[in-house]
Length: 202
Image (cartoon, helix red, strand yellow):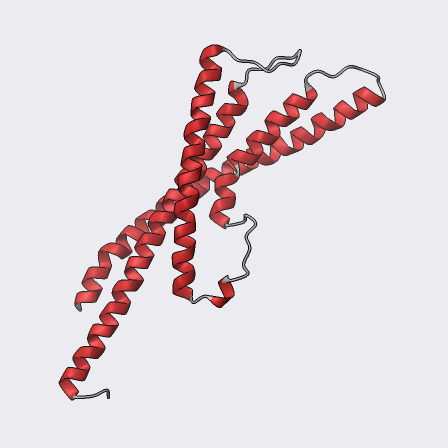
């Protein structure tokens, strides 16, 4: 067995393990996506009822808007990890076609690191807001007055899940970059050895 194959085996094993974790996380995210879809439908129904109650029944509404906002906040943040896994966010690909495959891998890995740093900070601040709202019993300023710990908690949970997804993608990217570098370096060493033995390329 060649030295490159032996050295590549740990990287392959790590990548395989990380991809199993990623698949498990996606199973959880897909279940949460069902909940998010139900939340979106619920928000649409609440807003539709609000319009009907205001303009047809002439009733005052004091909870529908905030309930819809809470549902939309939960659906947006909790589904973010699944969207990131699919890389379904909006991206500008003006220069990606001009770059080589390796440069694109490095570019995507660096972007994932920067995004992870931002999302981890966002998650930490969200948990801080959630804890303060929970301990202090903070509520909204409306007559309904729901606890603010609900939207903050949904936001914190969603951003934490997104941070875990990004962490897995960064780790998988690092393993794959290392493996490609090792294979390429072995190819260069093998070519140099062949040149030394034969005095030139075959």
